[in-house]
Length: 138
Length: 138
Length: 138
Length: 138
Image (cartoon, rainbow over all chains, first blue to last red; front, side):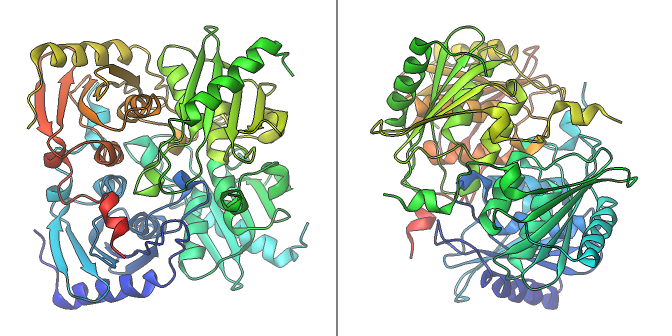
């Protein structure tokens, strides 16, 4: 696992908590905040943005990652997620991480009240993954 | 249609063009840039961010809208999209606009070379729409 | 608009109503049924299938269309949707119709109690659409 | 892991291979077939159905699962996936499995030429998952 400096970890968690407040989640009532450390050294935050047509909503993790990539980054180095129960990223968010992260990227899961803080690598959360290389093997 | 000041229009188009350069579209080879004017008066840009698992990618319009909403906005006032052929937002992007915009929101479609510039309202692009009110009618 | 024989229309609506009963919609409490007439002359039904990770769910219309296409069809000829309030297909479902239907395909919207029955063409519901041709214009 | 009778396994793989032929994948050129054994004892097949607006496409696994659920099933018991290189389900497909399967459900990955056949449990492919229980913990 890549080592993540303590100040980076604290910044990520604090940013995720801050963005959770901007969550638009009237349908699930499950607000989520996320924050990504990108290769440019900046931290990008996101919140879940739901939709009355439920499949058209987006999770906080993907909002944060898409922000980072659309600013020109092509690599993310760490991600933190905050929910009331330290919920884990859904499979689709793990897939989006897979496109832009190495398998040893740290994924930090925390609860809003700070009582739970866990850390996994992306490879632990998405083993035997599908990725860009699969499409090249004609 | 809401009137959009000329300088706002120019800023939106210029921002969309700028973000198009950050498009991650190795699978479609169809780069898209978008820019949203939000209720806070700021312009948020986005680019399409694709994925080897194609359904997990996201269009430029939704990247830009999700940025605006995750910063605390709950209303978007105008959007511009730039592609090589003045391509239109897909249906899913129109649905996400529907959640956060009035039906008279201007949607500006332009080509990178500036040869095409069209304007529609959201209501023109997504008539007889599904929206938050549908879920309330028990 | 293509003419749709009355018996086809009745079959589509009846099939959509039947599939609505199989809806898995514990998160929205908004059950939807849909039915598609495909080029092979068969009718394919679908219901909305939601997910605790909301963006990973799927609307009834897309479930029905994906069934038809995965059985070998490449064209759909008509679609009916049934909900409690004659709700309309979301933008993403309109986009999936766009890939496999002509713009004059009938889209029939009905309420479960039969009090509302409206009909539109796909072109009316998704004007100035994005489609396969857009990707070819290099 | 649940034991899967050999004839069920063979039926699943054969069905997935059959449906792969119906794949609509002009954008990725990566055809996928899938087959699901549902609680009603029937096998449901699916293929990937792509879209010019790439995020509006759907993977073969989800097409097959949505078929099974929309026919009234609420549980799937096994799934097989066939691609040219024994590619794995994307994260979003794993998430949809999670809604309707136990963590010991077998997921069989095979190559079209039969040279590769691997088996995992869903829990191995989606550890520390997000699921319906997460939304209940207010």
